[in-house]
Structure formats: structure tokens, C-alpha cells
Image (cartoon, rainbow, N blue to C red; front, side, top):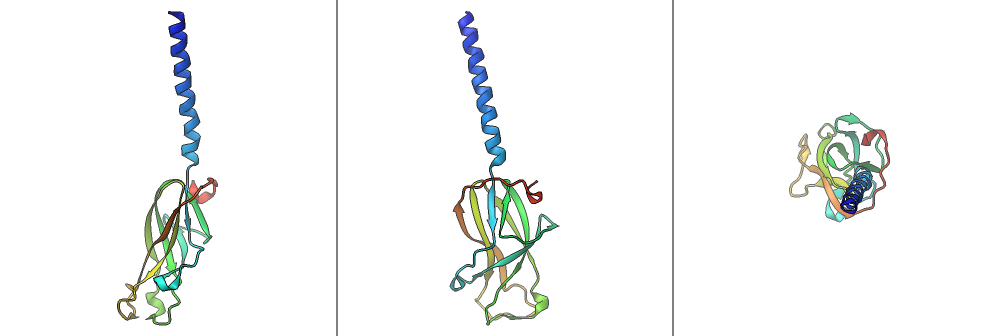
Length: 147
């Protein structure tokens, strides 16, 4: 009977320890949102600059390491296509909603719609999005944006 109780205690401790061992891994899991790569212009994707993350102003940087979850990026397009004829006042930032998963890298950009000619104050010439997603080992960096 004593060996049965000891076995149950050992089993309980093992499951408790394994639960503790997996918790730090889950809290350290992160995904990376990147805006530094220049997409191939023939795909009609262009770079963006991040101005806000979840409504808070940020200094734009190449990578944002984030805990898994839902985020809102305010981005400004950097489309340099000569066929774009909209006025500067139409070139306003837009919101990109993104669900970030752990160990994934999301390359964000601006998709330039080339299906018609855009002139004046028509801001529908582009939309923010993810132009490439890939598996990526992420080491969580506890920066102010990730807390």
C-alpha cells in the first residue's frame, strides 16, 4: 500500500513538473511581423512603414516580435509605381488586422491594385496585407511593444 501511495506521489510530481516545464515555453512563444524585405514589384506588392501598433505610436523597425494574438498595425504605403496618380492627401495610412501565431514570420506590405487608373483622392488603390508567411524560430524579446 505504501509503494502504491509513493507511486501516486511520484506520478503527481512528474505531471506537476511537466506542467511547469511547458509553461515557460508557452509564454516565450512569439511570432515576428516584418516589414523590411522589399517584395518583387512585379507582384504589385510594396513595402510599408508601421506608424502605430494597437493604436499606440511606434518607431518603425524591421521586426516586431509579438506574443501570439490579435494585433492592429497602422501602416503607410511606400508605393513608387509611376502609374500611381493619386494626390498626396489620398495617401493615408490604413489598418492591418493580423492574428500572430507562434514561430511564424509575417512579411507585411501594400498591395497596389493595378486593375484601373487611380487619380485624385481615391484611396482604394492599395490595401495592407501579408505577402509572405514562413516558419520562423522566434526568441521572445521583452520590449515595450510586446508587454
